[in-house]
Image 1 (spheres, rainbow over the protein chains, first blue to last red):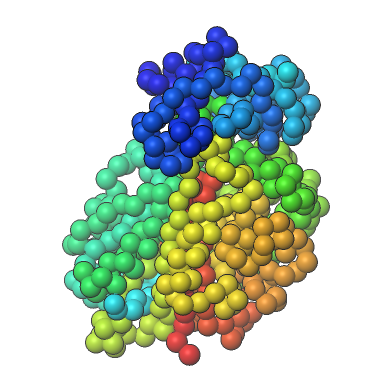
Image 2: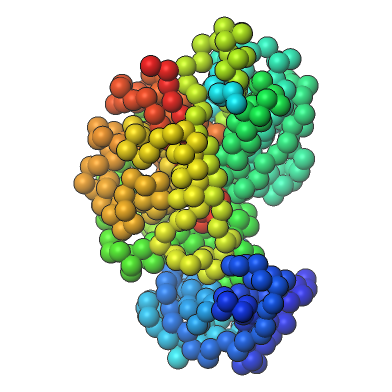
Length: 124
Length: 388
């Protein structure tokens, strides 16, 4: 399946060229977007995604869906990157070692069950 | 604008009934509501039907006309879908239709068949209520989503898994006399804490079960009730709905639920009441943390203050503000597309005095129901009042 807008964004994150969309009021959002979800502005510009984010919250998932049976147990975290947050699977560390406040960088990886690309957060 | 009365209510048993079809369950609930109401079938002008994942569980789309057949009604029917708030919005739109004068009688409710699926397939099905691109592909399940919210809550306000365990203990206790409930088993705080972890910090006993069931309510105008001489002492006096960004990552904060705040403000204003007037409440406790977020969003506690409410005994059956006397989603069960309707059914019985837990709220006149979809990207609040 192709998801125009999202696929290009994920590829860009994978090559270290991640970006987000920013409106004149400074609200951040992620593609595909035609308007800012926070204020409705149609004036959206690409802005570089910060290289480092901070884990705001996380969970260690022991019972995933069918697409994650080969990943369990795994940590999913929400990390703040300036004006946007990203949700990703934490790789590169033991799930038990993830903490709130931990610095992470965005990357891509393969889903271990489906082989599809997914967003990964790696400790920095 | 006319008032809206609950003329009749119906439920199926909530539990594991993997062999039962959706049409059979909704037919049972609708028939029970119709019979209790005394309203002749030809007077029912439309059906508002809540269902979330029937296209996955039964491979059945276009369910609403099927449910009209199952209810023995010849009227138009429409499916409402807002994930776990599907029946809540179905009831809300029925209330609005009757108030507008478009119809005198509407049957609302919902149904969900779930236990015919494997745990993995249910997990996947429920996850479709989250953002597919940005959440589900990052491994977010529904227990996982509420675990993210729970940890964010602990970080911001404090609290512990033990605080949450008291919510589960309370709701299991409340479900004991409820014949419609999935669980009739008292549990202890230690059992909750020692249960297998699903998605840390959400354990198995912090989570509602997977449930099959249906709910139905016959809603009528004041004028119709009087004309037909119905015994319908409970009215829906307030209705509100709130929305939020679908994905948690796009919300301003992760430890509060503004959709609930907005729905509650609208419903309280509609009914002309305030949180202090509420005698009892049924809230959407799909996970123990969800009850905390709900009682704060509904205005009974300041953000960060609700976490210890169950532990302190402030929300138990014998307290001033009993929360989830039905057993809640946690112990009564959560057939997702039926839940918002079942909350109206339970509240109606509690206020009328014919619920096994009515003895705890004998003087109650005003109750509130709160139904949430996804990670509270949708919230519906209703105010119900009983004639004095």
